[in-house]
Image 1 (spheres, rainbow, N blue to C red):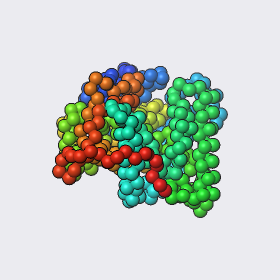
Image 2 (cartoon, rainbow, N blue to C red; image 1 turned 90 degrees about the vertical axis):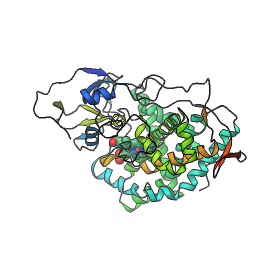
Image 3 (spheres, rainbow, N blue to C red; image 1 turned 135 degrees about the horizontal axis):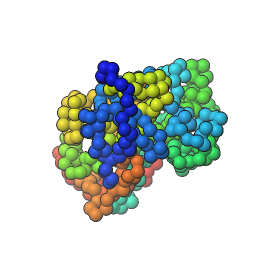
Length: 429
Ligand code: HEM
């Protein structure tokens, strides 16, 4: 980690959390200045708490894998007066586990989330994408691509792999949202968390009675063999409900915006599918969703850039800024679908790096390819702006009206009508 030699450890002035410009995915305009002039800043979050804000590539890379920084539970940070009374664990996901329990869970998940396992599932992923696009096509145009495809597709893919019934989404999605909401009261938080835990526990009972080819069944077997404890499996299930698809949705939605404004990138990918694997990596680098959403807490003092991060302080390693660091990525603010070197940090690093990275890459590649095949002349709908949540640091369009010229791409160009819409169902087991 690049720290400068002894200077008095003076705290910098506190600035407001940088937000992406309204109506855009970002990144926030301050990143370049912060990286140059104040690589370890102090920010005030909308909820009132302050946190260190690291923006340079090499600092983010080191901090996110530093064992002196833990992931606090939603109960422990940000500090809230009503949470002082909490006498039970709140929403504990895999991210907040440490030590042997975390390591055992990672071992049990290594194979089902491996490149090999995800590769085996590619045909199913493609069938899911096509099924959803059939329904989207049947709904007429212009349509909202987020609600019609970019949201359900990663959810369906996660549910299918993990063994969570997609049909239950009306039950678990609003509860997962509420559990994560900073503004819910302690009692509301407790209630939805307990409902989500009960839901996962009942699913695990079902997997014991009716084993299936999915991750939850494998974890239930691992418990039977004594290599995993039941509580860790519940923690994993909760991670999937709160984090197993949303990030992919945001990246996919921002990817479509980035490829279509202007539409040259989309056309280039349509005409040269060989670019797709590199383009997915470049989109993961370029799309600035991870604007300080990973929150770490120091368990001991850390010196960096002449500042002292004290034990207990929160630290935000800003992955989106690291991925735009000019010293690492030449012409970093340009989307370059042919970028050769691309050691981006979109999936983090170290013991808690993203377990779903291969699945997320596959979702992006398959989702984009299905779109390119189905809608070779996709455009943002004229006169209908995407809507954005401008209060949030992580931004992707909430709705994305597109116009679809329904033709398929033959081997060498654009031709012919698309196949007849089929009604969508999750792929058969
Ligand atoms: C483009 C999509 C995605 C991105 C950019 C992303 C990014 C990340 C990042 C940066 C972390 C590390 C957080 C930390 O250091 O605390 C993480 C952790 C995690 N991600 Fe993802 N993620 C994506 C999709 C997924 C998917 C599809 C799944 C599963 C279905 C998933 C499951 C997880 C889990 C369980 C962890 C916690 C791992 C642990 O604590 O050991 N992610 N993700």
